[in-house]
Length: 251
Figure 1 (cartoon, rainbow, N blue to C red):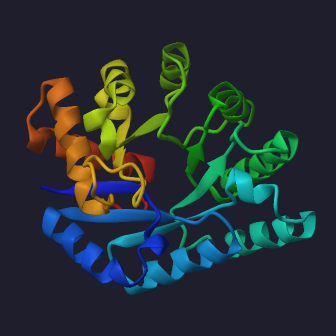
Figure 2: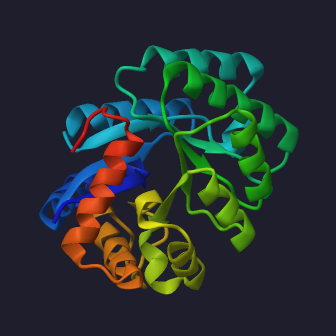
Figure 3: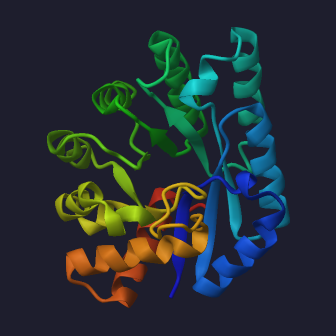
């Protein structure tokens, strides 16, 4: 069985990461995309991708971090990301979050990153907490086609709207305990689904830290909901990843 974790934060595992990667390999994980949030974690993502062959980096400026950096720092980081284009598989984690302040600043930096993604012809991995409507509007305005909506928690009508735009939805492993994500999988066709853990967050198991090996829980639940076998679900999800990557770094 081949598995994909399209969104994780591997830098947060520290000294435990070697064992986390080993368990992921044993579980059948073939690719982990680790996302940066700011200058420090973007560089960590690059270093981890150099150390582990199954790890690929996504670089970006997270909504909260976009409000902490100066205009000069944001400009510098966007230039840095552009200079790493050959190594980067996506621009992320980027987006909007209404639980943080300075929403206008967030929107401006999000727009800048969408422009960069279009320039580099890279997919975007998008965070949209409490701002799902605004995120979809921004993506549509930017004519962004290569989109992964990470842990999308918008209302069903917004799920359908994003689905109709052709966006991908990455389904976290805690779908096992989330009726909202189960409904999302029922609503979105299999060819627009991807799998993630957001590890070390959103564990499918109580009292266990989430990790990429647990992405199998997403696949199992998707297979159950879509009434498919595990092998055919895995095959379709791998195909989705390859489409998302648009012939770059295929599995």
